[in-house]
Amino acid sequence: MQRHTHRSILALAVATGLLGIGSNLRAETLEEALYKVSQTNPQIRAQQALVRATDELAPQALYNWRPTITATAETGWDRKNDNTATTSDARTKSLNPKAAKITINEYLFRGGRTIAATSVAENKILAERSRLMVTESGVLTDSATAYLRVLLQRELVNLTRTSELGIADELAGTRRRFDMGERTRTDISQAETRHAKAVGDRVSAESDLAVAEAMYRGLMGFDPGNLNAPALPDALPAKRETAIALALESNYGIAAALYDEKAARHNVKLVKGELLPTLALQGTLSRDWESSTNESRIDDAALKLMLTVPIFDGGLAYSKTRQARQLVSQSSNTLEKARRDAAEAASKTWDSMMLAKERIRVSQARVAAADTALANVSREQSFGTRSLIDVLDARQDLVDSKTALVRAKFDLMVAAFQLKQSIGEMTAVKLNLGEPDYNPVPHYEEVHDKWFGTRSSGDKERGAEVPVFADPPPRELAPLPADIKAASPLSLEAPARQTPVPAPVVPPVAPAPASPAPMSLEPAPVPEMTPQAPNTSAVPLAPKAPPSGFTMESFAPVQSEALPAPVAPPAAAVTEPLPQPVKPEAAPKAEPQPQQAPTKVETILRVPAKPPATAFKETPTGFLAQLGNE
Image (cartoon, rainbow, N blue to C red; front, side):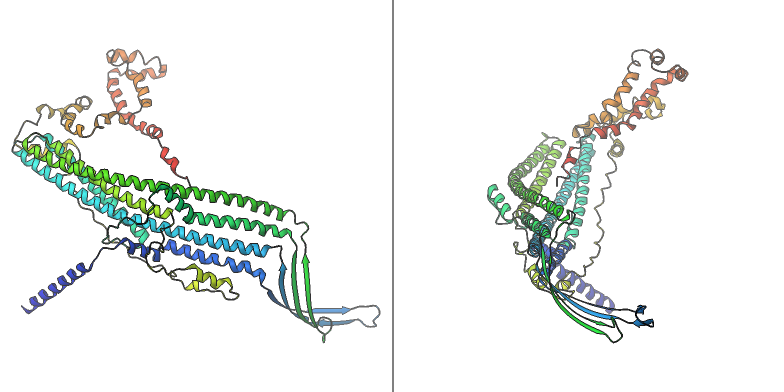
């Protein structure tokens, strides 16, 4: 008894704890999610590391202002044999010469290349900082879109589930009325068709939700929990012209292209400086041991002023100068393209936002009208003035209108964030997401005048270790209802056999399968199409299904052989046209004339093996031309 009491207390404690945890769960806002992205996204952190690497261009350009000091030392073995004719005896001596030397170089003039290299480095650093802002704004925009897409797909899943439950109730009610003789098999077929469509829509929505959650996790780095629907961003331009002006003024893509163009112009001066003289000051201090005798030691100190004038280098400097000028032209056109792209993006997103607002207004009116129509049609059906298909159509119209409204709201939010990106306001600082933990200026100032050391504070920046996130738990989709088997007439026979009404059963159809195979090809469509007549009204493309797999090219050779057949009996019709196009060697193969009529049917049935290839070639693929615009 005491043991059971302890178990009850433990179960109560666990339940209380779970309830407490559930009560503490709250929805995560979009601002909180974007702040986490700005702190942990690997794409942003990689671009930050690239900015820190670009900062090193400044000290690399400034090194020509600074002296260079080198020290050299050498030693060796030298054997000298003095065979001078004036000496009485030849003398041989071995020496161990040693030398040490310190050299100091300082450039006084390099043709303006040092100043030009410094300007190139400064502009490249600013361009890379602008590209960091482009990356950050793009990642935050994509993250906001992924956040909104999860909300969209969750809402669509709820809509499809509600629609499925409503149509399931209609189907159950129709079957009950069918048992009472108030409905027909046509009504059941229509309800089952709509129910199968509702199940398919729900499964498709759940699949899209799984994809949206995977995209969310790929950008955010964590699974989506309880998400809160955000409000429309504020401070949006009220006019298209204002949006374009702000984009031309504040777009970070334009800023990056502008700094690249300035760097290219200074690069022309850098390359052109190779044609100018170079003036340098060099000082040396050296000592030599045993250079001539075993006891010799020579100390040397020198200070030199060296002037180097290039006369001809094979045309290399001239070629580099021409190349640099063309790079200026390329960067200028890139800048113009960046301006046009920014203006286009601002105009396009502003128009999309205005159209989305109009779609929301129209969709809201459509939802209200569809809701009223469904209520009225349901009431009229109870009076007998409306059929079941009218109720199903009204219910589908309501679901479609709600889906259109949800998608219009999603498009409005996405267009608003894309507009903020085009005008340069989709950054962590301008969105007021929190105190930014990355500032490129301190690292630049640290390495700008750093003369010694192989490390900087950037090595201690966060991001040395990328966190490893656990795999999400497997998603389990809701199972299909038991009554959804296949969209075929066989699925409709089960309720017909259970009912005591013998009218739907057609006696002549039963012996039809026992007939020979060639004879069953012609009457088979007749009993199959008659019960499917109500279903073809719901699907307008059903009558076109038989010829859809054929093309005019595939019909052409069949008609040339099949046209003479219905004109005369098979024996006479086949023997006359065959000898003309067929060679005499193929004549004996056409002797079994009575079998040619079914072979034509079989050839017609086998024609779809080739037309799909020609049909795919003829399908329009113009949308592929949109790829690669950039």
